[in-house]
Length: 401
Image 1 (cartoon, rainbow, N blue to C red):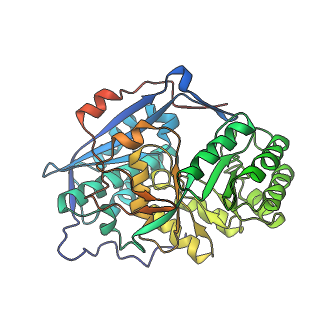
Image 2 (image 1 turned 60 degrees about the vertical axis):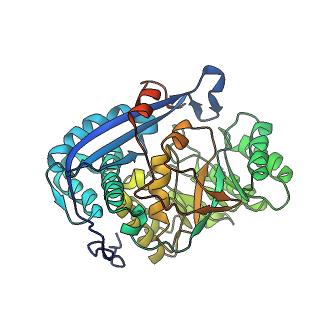
């Protein structure tokens, strides 16, 4: 990994105490369940609810903070046991800066916690401490990481689920109607139908609209061959795609390199990587033009920024993956805002009550520009009323075929 030397994490912003001591930590599982008529059907499966695996920390002064493990949209039930296993290495420990938390947990639990949702939970704890310190000090969480590169960041609409071409087109048109300039829609289950999707939908997009095609092969239960991924990529290039997302299985970085070298369109990935070092394997084979880390998957804000540094060293742009609740959204937005190699941000526009209910202030977007939040901490409010309104329901969530 290209070690992050451009950030002095231990340096306190003027007048701000960045230290933290955790008194308590607990897991909070939430579900925003759709009615059967509201289920989101797509070729990759069914979204029956939005689940959130949150972590709440309480500092010794009583200030609370919240983080999220992104992979819990599919595996929320795993989070409480991991939190309990981390607790002995966290409670009573004093940290000089919130970004020390994730590395501390990974160091002391390396025997069992390297990668997967365990590292996502470590990152959620780090983000929760960042949130708590920001709230205690009365400053936005980003101020503990650096200075935003601009007051706004370009954002694009992400969703595009559907089992028919017209469903995908209707979704895309609706996003353009509310000001988005770029829309990302998902592939169909097989390459030939995806090619037909591109040939049908792209020519009918409103003039000037940019598009992204997400092949969704990074976590596919039966992924495409390199040859098929290239065929789809060539059609995406023909239609002028802004980029071609996840054309290969996450564990096969050389497949990404093979596709990238054969198609005339930028290639991106891999949102589900759960270790910063996973991206090294992708960078070392020149597998992508765009890296898509998610702070709630890859191990927290510091790990995200380490990936962004490594990407910059390889001439790779960063466009974060952002799914899940408001906690995921805000964690990634605060973190991404301070790195000059991040100039574009994903906005999932699928209906998700947990993206709105947990926010202190609404997301502020003007057309293609998203404002960097100014609320102290991450701008999240987890209340007893919210916990009561969205009780966790096991067995729903995102179901992959």
